[in-house]
Image (cartoon, rainbow, N blue to C red; front, top):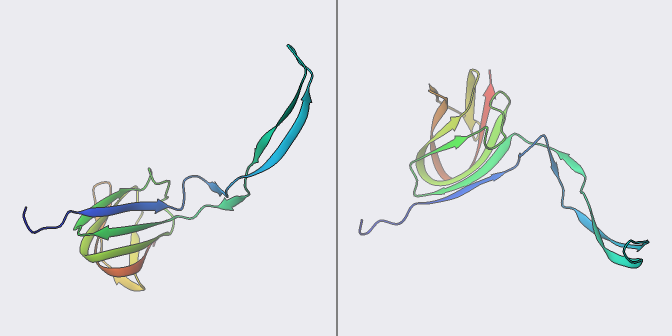
Length: 141
């Protein structure tokens, strides 16, 4: 359509992919003698050292522009709907967010104010007024 801007969505940055995240790995120089076969050699190179584990968080971040509705599949995001879930959301207007997953009875707060939660097939829906940056918390009752 003429005069309308394209819809854009910045995909959520996951803050939980597995039970633990690993910090960035580092490298160290390696040098050793290789006895063969076929021929003896002196080897030099680098070896990766895994970073330390950090605890997972049941949260995500998303930025929306010119979007009225979006759905997130929580199992594919490695998020647990049975636990407290938090999201940092940035948007430019009202929108409906569907969180797909096996939710127990929950309540939701946007910046500390209650939000109506609708149970739908396969998850919950929230109607949010997102102008700027907001913090959403969904927690089991």
